[in-house]
Image 1 (cartoon, rainbow, N blue to C red):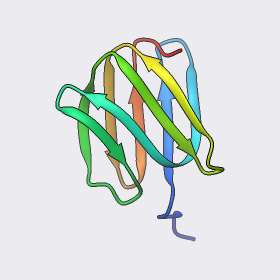
Image 2: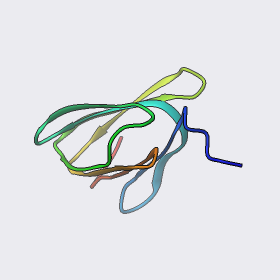
Image 3: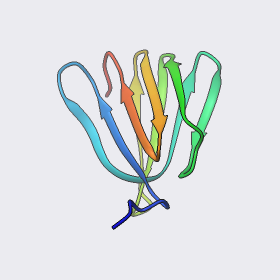
Image 4: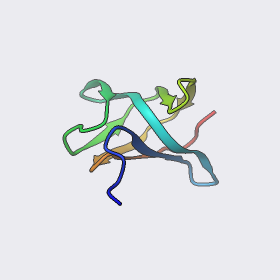
Length: 88
């Protein structure tokens, strides 16, 4: 069965733990190039995060925000990977 193209598969990890993992409708983050809003079908990208907030809108509609300190975000084929020094 093909992957659900209407959702994002998201992982937010720090060096010590997996902070958030699951299906999402949208991810927002701030990079050195500006603010990103990532929806299903987003073009592939790799960005450098700045200190700030990452917001994840889960598949149930709840929005969770994390304060991150730097890191990287990668988007490819509806998979979003966020690696950060720390998230709280």
